[in-house]
Length: 190
Image (cartoon, rainbow, N blue to C red; front, side, top):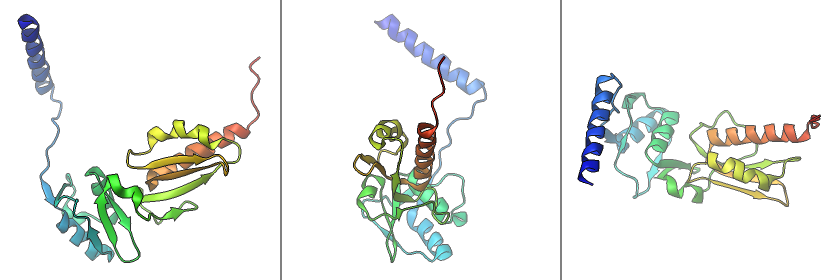
């Protein structure tokens, strides 16, 4: 057991040394910034007000983007990268832990909307005519973030999705492609 442990430790040391000598970059560490500072910057630029859930941390990691350069779309991405999300209301935008996002009144989309940012959480009902919605759920569910939701109604043959807008667009594209293929004549296998 001691010999095996020694060989394992030597193997890790060689692996670490090879990674350092190969010139591969090491993961960058970025200092956290005050969330309040980001929200103040975005509020000035966008005119939006923000309400922060008490469970939200005071600091977030931004990366290499300057805090003065952050707009609403970038803020949504920063929030998503830090396990947070934005839930808009008629008067302000709530900043909440992403694990709670599907419990809020998110915008219900009936069609594509270029005015919505890809990292903004939305609800979407996707109607299908040929493909059977319940059969699509296991195919599409892995593409939905853990905090999101995907379900089907067999009576109405629809999918119900709660996810960031970019994810819902992707799911709709895939569902439409499945619809096209379901309505196409089957090629002969002979």
